[in-house]
Amino acid sequence: MRRIYESDALERDDEEPLAPRERQRETKPQSFRSISGSAWSDRLLPHRVRRWAVTVDLTAPDGPIGQGEDVPFQLTLKNRLPMPVTIRTNSPRLWAWTVDGAQSASHVSLEKPPTETNKLKLDRGERRRIRRTWSGMFRVSKREWEHAERGEHTIRAAVNVSDPEAANLTDETTVYIS
Image (tube, rainbow, N blue to C red; front, side):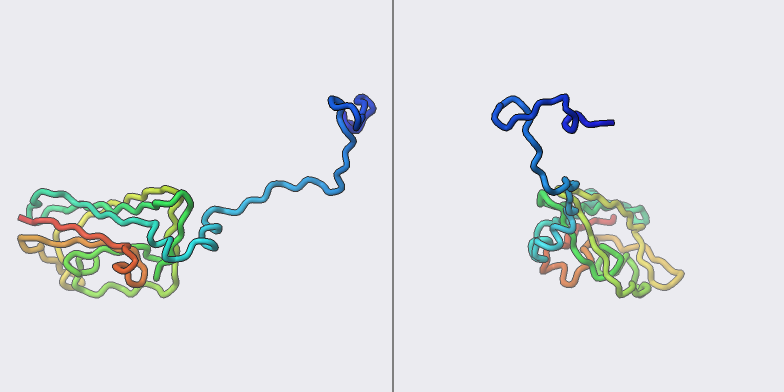
C-alpha cells in the first residue's frame, strides 16, 4: 500500500504554510529507549541517600498478651523518595527479627546464611508490610521450646545490612506478657 506522503495526491510546497513540506530526514526514526528506574537510582543515588530514604517501622499489640499466646507483629518498610531505591543486603535474607536479642526467638544458633548478597528493592513511594507471629516461646535446643517469662520483651527488626543502627534501618517495640 502506498503512503499518502509518497504519492502525488498531496501537493508539497515549502512556501505555502498549510501545505505539507518535503521530508528532509536522513536518519530513520528510532524507538524510544528507556532506562529502568531502579538502574537509574543504582547509578546516581549514593548509598547514604538510599539508606536515608527507607524507613523501618515495627508495631505489635499494645495490651498485655497471655503466656503461650501468639504475638503478631508487623514490619513496614517505606521508600520516602519519588524514585525507586535499591539497598544491597549482606545475604539473601533481606531482614531479620529478634526477641530479647535471640535471633528469631531462638537461643540455638540457626544455620548460617549464604555469603552472597541480595537487594532490597522498593519502588517509588512504596510501602511494604510484612506480618509475622512470635509464638511467645524461645527455642532452647533443637527440639525444645520454653514459654517466655512474664514481663516485658523487646521485639526488634532490622534490614540485613552492616551496622543497621548507624544506617537507621532498624526499629523495636515492647510487648508485655502477663
